[in-house]
Length: 177
Image (cartoon, rainbow, N blue to C red; front, side, top):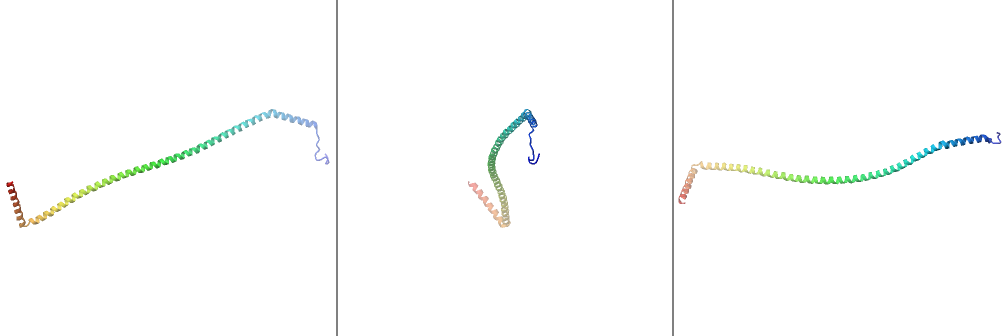
């Protein structure tokens, strides 16, 4: 090796080259015979596994799409049902309010009638009491006036004369009839 030939002086040593080539061929043959079939089988299994996973992924995607669609339909049905229930609740509430108003009107009428009857009863009782009190007061006053008039001797004698005249008129009237 000198500098004019270049940095490296490459020479061909044919026996070494052929032995290395033979060794390489043996290694490649051994690899092809014993390593390639298991690697190919492993690669086929891996490809099958990946293919199954892709199919499962596609199936899962389809199921997910179907589930999302079912979920959307369920939400729509639920909203419809909620609206229906809300409508029914409002109608029921309106019926309840109407029934309560009718019941309240009936109760008001009953209480009013009862009150009117009670007022009429109290009014009759007061009229009876006042009539009795008035009658008693009038009789007391008449008695007082009659006593005052009959206490005088002249009123007594006039009263007796009138009584006797009435008796005589009654006795004469009976005898002629």
